[in-house]
Figure 1 (cartoon, helix red, strand yellow):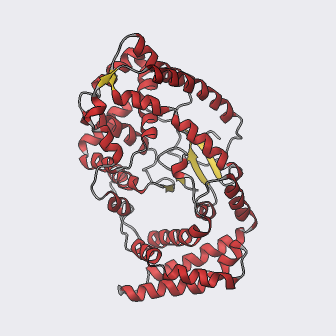
Figure 2 (spheres, rainbow, N blue to C red):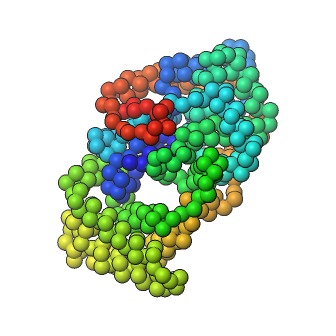
Figure 3 (cartoon, helix red, strand yellow):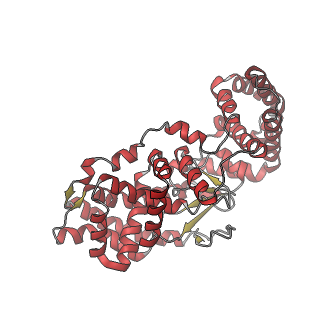
Length: 408
């Protein structure tokens, strides 16, 4: 039962059908917040600043505009996944320290380990997620202790340079990542650019090197082969209709799904442990394994005659992109390799946005923002009412995840 991390349930991390069938149950997080004080504080902040003629850097107002976007995305995805929520998708809320002390500790960690700050700079940041985490820290935790005046000073103290803004964001993100980097429970990361940061933090906290054993390699290859076979057939669960179909397959064809997983595991074991580095021989062994062992269990899963799948699998096994990708997976030695390769040392779009000098220019909140925030605050209260109507899920958490709470 993997936890989908580190962001909230959104369109960007809706599950692939293969994930639901392979893992049987996934756990997603609601956006941080939903406390009445936080909603009121954030919705009213632009009006407070406007009334006092207070100007703040542009990034603060951009974050305010983005904060409530998370709620809309999560509600949309909850509706999509409704047929799976009874048995296969759990929705939970995380409550963890986000006050000044927690963020200062994260800043100290980043200062001590510059490689962690660099890894964060590679992440393809979802700015609506970033805005929710940062404002939940400043306009809830800081606000509770020091009010709007303290929050204003905090914004100013952390906006003295573009680097200071990025360091605040990085510290807030690292503080959240610490929930998931212990290895206490399996995690599922849809945005691979997060891998380097998660792996780096795990290495710092545990002192372990991120080395892959044969068992790890076989399990990972089994999962990716299972995903690759089903991806062209089912794709992503992006509609209630597809969610219902996958739910029915998981329930009615559980034995066939297990048989397909077992076939993928046999292929993975034989391939990963193959005593040769000859790429041609390795590719031949992989394609033969797929053509021989996958047809029957796959036919049972999708309820098609085996003869209808022979041509499909032949095309699949001859697809150089798919096979090349699977061959590359077998050569991965650490969990962060994929993410590092994708990042390629370049700053992410989100990071470039934060380091942009335009975001540092001070301005007063616009009337459009003030009115939009007031509407969004009222809508957020309605959302809380809807969430309370969703049946609670039963999820077993690792012992060191005591702050994670089941919400829906």
